[in-house]
Image (cartoon, rainbow, N blue to C red; front, side, top):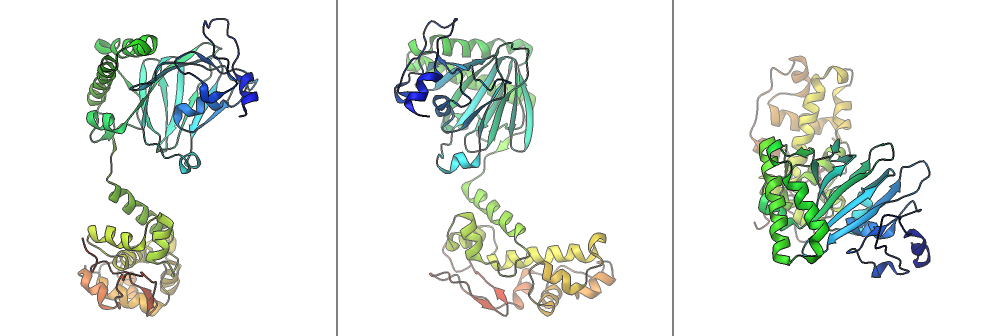
Length: 384
């Protein structure tokens, strides 16, 4: 949004004593009341979520959001109010150029909102709160009303504070309500932080935010809410590797280099991650392929496929190569396995799978090579 256009976004409001009127959004002060009026997208509000989009959902396509920030330091606490429907959302495209990793806690004062994230949608009503991560796509949308006021408090929390109270992760698929005997504490704390936050000493403000987090922690504990478990970065990378391999299992030319490139890591690091899991790229690839073919040989919806077709559809270049590996791994041929309904199979140690393979080292250059139609990326010789 240009500076000239920005001037038309902020307009006088009959109930606001202090209204920001500025030609320069960079000089905008959140300590005063902000009124976004008459535009479908408001650049200033995007900064609240470290790059997101705002959309008007009202019939006239207008936005009338009043954003009142109580304080900016040490934590950003804001009260957002509107009579028209709107939505904030943050997608993967926003995160490419903006990788802020903070947690947003929203407490609804009045009205109701729909929060979509982690593959689920929940309704957050008055007196309820929810958590979102800037590193996870979300959509926060006000629900239809008869032009009555929708209000919610928003606080941006650094990860170290969140981990202090939620060391195992935060609930991302549940909205939470305080029990009746504690229902007044959280709204009173948010009200104090927004009404008087700019006048509070940082020590006092920190103490109040800590109290909010303790209240949230107790509510989550009592509700036995499902926790979005915090993963180590190695586990996250490994999940990416497995997901890409599962999606491209049928490609006979998939290699350690192609998987690593797709996951944004180096082939050497990929081999190291798999070594931490006690496997190598080669072992994992062929184990997953054999597991899939084993299922297909007996599945009703694939029984009309020949053994050769099943082999090709799961990334094997020749039926002979597939049969040899299958027998090494399960102790019987694919044909015998299918005829016996799976009764003849026996589990064979992993070393038997390697017996039919020629192993190539994951050397310094990590070049992709094929031996007998099989790519091997061996991690065992990498340092821990």
